[in-house]
Image (tube, rainbow, N blue to C red; front, side):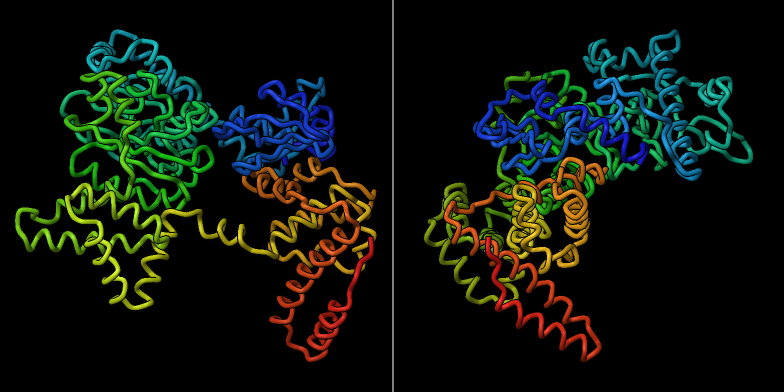
Length: 593
């Protein structure tokens, strides 16, 4: 951590979470908590809960959750140290100098220096665009109908025709070659020495979600190659983990993101009001991209080029997005190639209509599949029908499969019953393994990620969540259960870590402050998972007998799972006999409330 634990806790406890979140979200009190519409996903019924007792928030709709630091980090696009500083300033708390190891200091200093150099370079490129040398670049941007406001918004610039202009400028600023070599802005060789990687190009600063310049893209002026050039991989820039325009798109509050192919498409769409557009950075869409997007949306509309290459890119992206649990639809832009061209010719209203009419990813895949078969030839059409029938077997649910059968039958002018019989015939002729493989493939692509699905359905993890939430709500439960269950019975690493912190606080004070425990997790995704452990809905009855039964079933389920896992790894007979004895005692266990 950048600050001592006691300082972080002082800052957290000095900022009431209801007051902080109430400044962003309209909250209404219901019982002991406050509810409002979740700011992290679109919803019509409030499922976003803020607890003054726990000093936490949790959305029962999308799973977003955490303490006051998490909220500022997520809503304001801030890092953890930045969130601490914002809240410390608000509470009038003076922060000490960050306590870092020497290695951490070197790493932080290098990262900060690289960010500083990138910002300096971005300012220099912007200056060049608006100076005497930038005339051609300005004309190019004007011909692309980009307003001055848009150019400023995206920080567009120009790298001059001289191949060492930026290098000389950075050297005059006092930066040494040793650090400049790590920026990706320069190339070093024995013959030419140091020279600029980008020259005679319109420059596009690439920003992370915190609006910091981490790299650049450049579009050549004239016929030089490559047409577009990106920064190489650096300490700051990983093109497979960053999306152009996400720093703006993540705050658009639209219920979906639009993925384009390049910088100009994103910029043109943002200028037209479609501020939820992003693009991958000179690379194919990756699983890391889908994980990044999943933090901000549940649905994506693909706006790739309408040519063959664009269709192939869409076909590659669809299964990646679906395997991340993201719903996918495809925007058709014919007769134009890309969103920029479409909007220039038909306008924003027409493009919005295309967005609204976006096709389901499965129907898009079928339409692309169709192009592989000659429909005018009976044999070709029959082969196409067979291929479609096999694809339809990917849907494990009969109702959903029948919906798509009807849709395809309507599109291609065939009888639904005939297509259904063909699908069933293929299903019957396939081996059980083949059918299961097809179903598994579809589930992996269209449902939530496997780990999340298992977690949702795992009764043991549910019991552990239930028990931890119960301990928070009623700390007196600890004294009644401490002889039977402890943190070692929580095997999954994150659950174990949280449980250890909970039991530690209960042993020390008899109380638990969940928000304080969340301070131990700087990673936002870990905070969300930890927050869910304290916000499981307790469906306990007021009847003491029902509550006792629920508690005993919960404790037994957790302990039984723990003992079974231990029994798989023991090697000594004595240890195994001990576990068998504990299992027998577990059957007789009954805890009274």
